[in-house]
Length: 173
Length: 190
Image (cartoon, rainbow over all chains, first blue to last red; front, side, top):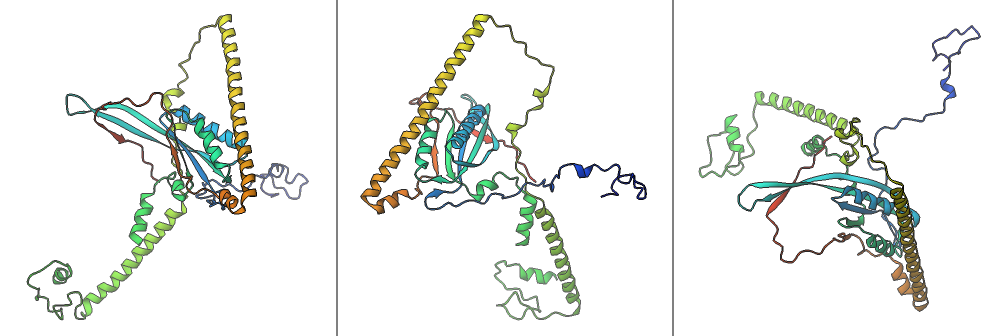
């Protein structure tokens, strides 16, 4: 460490004069890669639900975002542990309709479907229907609500597909 | 070699091919009499080649598996480039004092309305929880077994699906035009 600086006159009293890295706080090891399955899927006990996904889907982005924020804040307020709150990839749909006189399909609109997911865990069995009731009563128009248990397939759907890997695996087996 | 291939293809043949004198009997078209020197070398080389191929594939597989899988980027969070142009600036007209006064009062009314709504929701949750606890207490006094069964989690609760309410009910006798939906989502591959 003493020799990491440029000046290295070991006999001189000014040896190690340019050192400063030892004064900076420790950074810690760099971890850039996204962990595949950092969170273990909690199966839950008999009196508690494990990981539950609250998925909100809609064509309107602002509505779905605000509703997701509301649900997250509600869970925070009620002491329910929110493990993750993320957005699923947007789906784009082109709506074509058949003209009245003619056989050509005409473009009507391009719709984008947005989905937000709030993942909670440790929901007690007695409180679950109350939470459901509260969320339902404040559900905005056009927002489709879906609550289900978290599975690995749900996690995998967020990841990019790897056709080369799949091809190789198919070839190997 | 060509006679080999014609016998190994499993085509239904009326007249069994007997041109191949390596074949011992009609009933076992796959097996053949042991062949001699030349083809053996090719077999060894084949085996080596196959092994080399397999090793290469395994190496490739390891390399691909090392790379961590990435999440699909979400288009909602990426601002399109046309909005990053700083030359377009909105100039708002100046507001009169009455207008500002009206807006401030409206904001205050809205705040009060939302506060009342929030309080009502909190109260509703509170009453629900209290009544539930009371009911469970009474049930426990009634019978321990039923209480235990009630405490358990409801498997039929999830998955739960519900469509949001609509502004208007569906029109009776509405005939929608024919058409289709085409999914044009961009597919990301790693």
